[in-house]
Amino acid sequence: MLTSFSDEQIKELSMGLELSKQKFIWLLNDPDLGADLNRKFEFHAGFEERLNGVGLLVRDWAPQTEILAHSSIGGFLCACDWTSCVETITMGVPIIAWATHSDYPKNGFLLSEILKIGLIIREWDQKHEEVVTASTIDNVVRKLMASEEGDEVRKRAKELGEAVRQSTEKGGASQMELDYFIAHITR
Image (cartoon, helix red, strand yellow):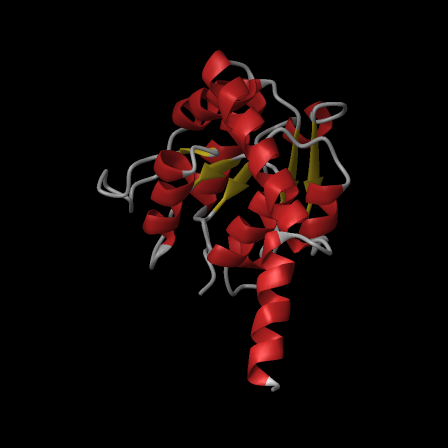
């Protein structure tokens, strides 16, 4: 299932990112804009020009895992689909969880309350159909990127990502379990 944001939500998100004054990469592609492939969102006056040196807006598909792996991203705003969560965890990048439907609220809870490698934009039961304000987005982004709590979240995310990557290397726990499983089913 894909998530589409309303024009109003995209406007609030853009204002919140700008207010935070934190570096960002925004992949604004078809799922964000909905089924209308000809839809092109128009940002508030001067937004795209003011991104120079702070933000990068990509209006097409981009290789998410490569961006996560080869950049110094301090956090990842995620709708909390499991694939994005696993990719982000593996790369050791903290998550700002924006649960929109299905199992996403549970994934957000896992990331923020159990693993403690992310923050939640808004609790699921807090009128999840309503638009999240620029102020809320600004506050959560700053909390992750420019606070002591955010420092701890980023540190835990980095450590967990390192542990996950080590477990899949030769001799790592996950690799050994996979080898044992394959040996068992092929005997």
